[in-house]
Image (tube, rainbow, N blue to C red; front, top):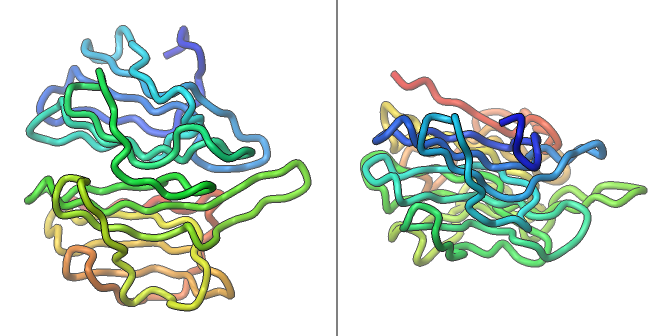
Length: 232
């Protein structure tokens, strides 16, 4: 990827159905003051030997990419959006034609993009996505707010409902990292940033409908918001 317009990368995703298809989301996904931004998403169909920019050039920071394991033309991109201004391309975007066209299926709001998304391997229409409100100024950083939330869809992103039963109910949320167990997709983990030390490590045993706080490890959304579940 040394010869593209940017070398800042937020996520890399390889299609399970065709390992020659690789997607890269550009723009660092951790909002430090020294953060580098990108110019959208790139696709390779030859295992990374060549790349094509597939759009979302105003996203600036990509948090996560998910490819349907049975149809490599269906791709979801979690775009965090610009860090130091509102607008741009922020939210969860979906393509069904391999990136030729995009539709925004989840809009986080004025200041919130989508930071993470997971897909149920048993039912690819079931998705969880986290919106994240953040804003960096020269003199400070606003982490979290009322636009941060966890959302659940059961129809491939057509409709969404908040899925926060068990989360702190009276506190602003920040960044939410997600991991769905490949062994048992009913088990989902969330690492949650919240005001007044109400964040922590949460677990769901009903595919993200309800949550239980497992410990009070209050994460820092600048860095520590990615989780990985053991595949076995």
